[in-house]
Length: 379
Length: 234
Image 1 (cartoon, chains in turn cyan, orange):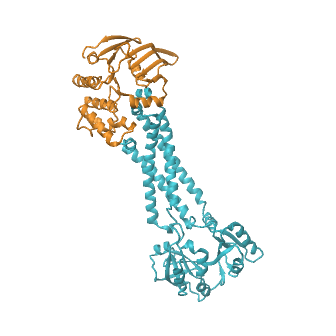
Image 2: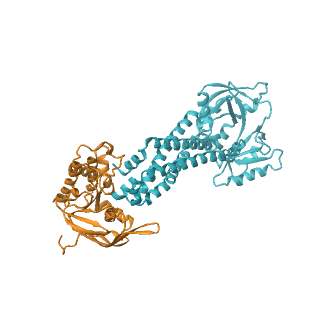
Image 3: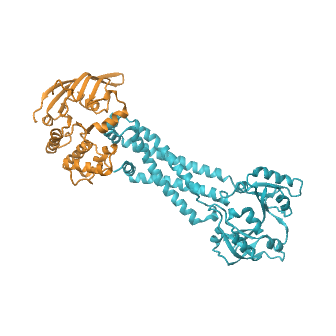
């Protein structure tokens, strides 16, 4: 037998109680990990960069900007690369199966945003092979069951010059994103194709994507770009990619606050249940704690033993909750914005350790301070 | 005991009183006691005479209000809680009336418990547990849990747990108080063996004169003072 086994035996002595406690802890961490995964992964906000700038129309994100702004932005010495995108919202087969298409210049997008999206030279070359080619993000391809070489049709709000709303493409490659939290639930089409075929808003874009030179403050550059177009018909608002995505999410609700409140309530409840249960458990065992003290177990060891028990319950319950959350994020898929990242895992582990120790503190303190003679009277 | 030889256990001028509300109930007012190494002493006396309080102080479970308690070279009255815990882990073993085994541990794990406090490897701990289980006649019952053992068997586990760390001193609090006569005699024979063959110093609190007869000498405690009698059985 080891000290750890002794601790585990103590925790397991009332199996139903321990199991129920672990279940509660597991549910709390399932909620936490799912909400944190949603926060981290929703619309790629976690993978979004603070250094990549987006230039939008100040009057509204849906409004276009002239393509002619490109040269004025590119002329700034602190701009390393600039690309432009025109977004096309549409659906595949049924209206609720929505897909987003970004019309881009292949080389420009590779230079400005290629690293984050995982756009290799081969993929860019494949996109340039034909005017009807598209690159599909991994998450979108998996969700739709698409593969390279497949012909696909998208019905878009964007009308073609011939009055049709049907756009036909050939998938020439799949991009994966630099990591799991990168948003890949969209596809990249060629701007020249879309621009030539669309009925209106020709030679306009929705966004300019700007990569500042290394060491340049993105905030300062953003202000300077906006200043360029202060007196233009279409003024700009320049934000980092992260600011943009967070602002976009905030249009619906303050997701972070809601998640914080839900998770906070779950954790406070679990904290109270566990502290209460452990206090009872320690009180029930006062006599045995007295026996262990008689055998020579120091106050420190008794404290470690009780703290270890709560840690064990939190570790087992928390691990089960995190495992289920990981499973859920894999089954549901990233199109719902759930990404169980390393950051979610490490934060969860820190909370498991913190709450495990916190909940054990009061019962452990009581056990540690219990005088032997009083413990023996408790029988 | 040789008067010129320093006693193994020495109590000098020990005072102890309990306070219940505003009332103070004196138990000892200047108790003296000397016990030689290797002695087997039974302590008898009526209820409330201070037998358990004496045992608690000898085991470092309770402190005297005044006076000196020395065991070997250790002055218990000068020790803090941590030092007394360390002393209990290494210097003495205790046998309880109701065995006080931990119910979620089997026999060998109960016996191994005090060894977790010693710097011993798992193999050595296991070897020591096997040795003492053989010694107390519990070979083959390693995996049995206390709930499935008789009172006599549980007390053997209790004794094995008390001696597994090889302490010089054994304190026994009514070790046969919960056993039938035959089991009680077996346990007392075992204590006698530990005293004779392994030179353990034993102090046993008991109400039972037949149990006291197994000791080398009997001390009667009355109103906080000792009256010595010669043991009969050794």
